[in-house]
Structures are given as C-alpha cells and as structure tokens.
Image (cartoon, rainbow, N blue to C red; front, side):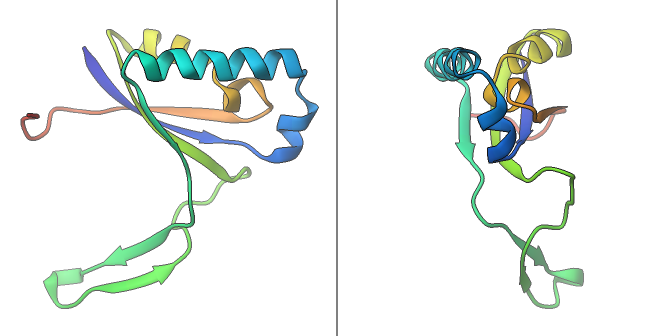
Length: 113
C-alpha cells in the first residue's frame, strides 16, 4: 500500500454552512478511517525552523505556507492508488464542509520499522 499525507483546509463558517447530516457522516467516515489505521490530527500553531548551513537554529512563529483557508488538520493514510486516496478524503469534514484537502503521495524514503 502507498502512503499519502493529507492537508485539510477549512474554516468554521464553511463548516456551519454545511448540512449537519453531511457533517455527521463526514465525522463518522473519519472515525472509520482512524479505526482502519489512518493517522490524523487537528493543526495547532506552527513555527518555521531554519538551520542554514548547520550554522544555528532560527525559529520564527507562524506558517510558511499561505492559503485562502486556514490549515485545519493533517493526516497520513494508506491507499492502493492516488485515486483511492482521493476517494477516501473526498468524504472527510474538510472536503464536504466548504474546504479542500490536498493529497500528497509519500515517495520512497528511509525503511519503516
């Protein structure tokens, strides 16, 4: 199975404009994904970390990325294909509640335990 990083963007007003039944089903879908092994969390306040040329760490509060909607959360999911990953995230709260979800394939990296 391939792994994917998901980034959900959304705001409270979009969430509140979405039919409560649709939101409830999206939260139930998230719960099923977590039970199946997905990892997810709500985004906190970020910091930027730099250590150019390994000459000293510099930390600045705030995000480096910018988007029309705030980052709401992150996830790691497994799916056989990008299309399957898209199908999974298309039913999550950010996707159905007037937000957007990015899906980033994780390419081969260091071996996992």
